[in-house]
Image (cartoon, rainbow, N blue to C red):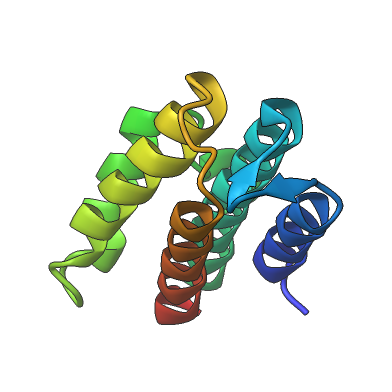
Length: 124
């Protein structure tokens, strides 16, 4: 199993332990933690792809802008939609889900996690 999938599975496990009342998570903290872990899964998938392409660990991106540049340079030439998908995942998982804690609806989180899995599968 890849590190990316392991991280995504860990994020799902965090959510499984989080109480839901009327399709709304009862506690925002574990939802934020799960979103953060799912976002890390996306970054791990990109790292794994770049390592397969011959980059060294020292050459891996260290910032969001560096990840954007790496996607454009190494992945967007093969799939023009990949950069847009990454931006959506960045906004939904990292900014709205983790940083701002805006996602409490279980169905919304489920769809965002599906999108993260789809992204990971596309670049593996």
